[in-house]
Amino acid sequence: MKRNLEAMYTTTRNIVGGTFMTCSDCGDAISMNKLCEKPLQSATDMLKHMAHHKACHAFASGVPVIRPEPEAVPVIELARALGIRWVSA
Figure 1 (spheres, helix red, strand yellow):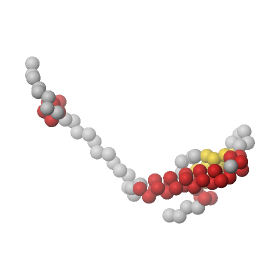
Figure 2 (tube, helix red, strand yellow):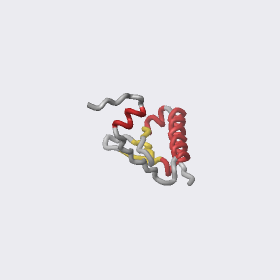
Figure 3 (cartoon, helix red, strand yellow):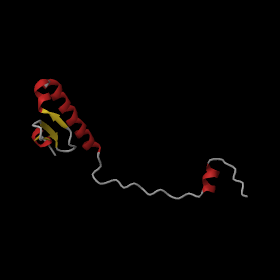
Figure 4 (cartoon, rainbow, N blue to C red):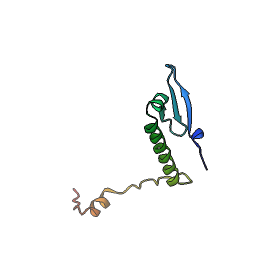
């Protein structure tokens, strides 16, 4: 699935009048003022952010991973496994 810059970022405006490029995946925002003031740094930040998402998608599994339920282990078995002498009263 190929994503371009337009699909990755959307332009949003807040009530105060600030304009931001907002990531469609995670909501991370970059100020348009920062883009104008420091274009090379902003472009580098955007590319790093996009690379991070690409890496996350590359290593993500195709199906949801279900964590196994922990088993209840009796205290006596834990004590034996840890080498603790169990003295019953």
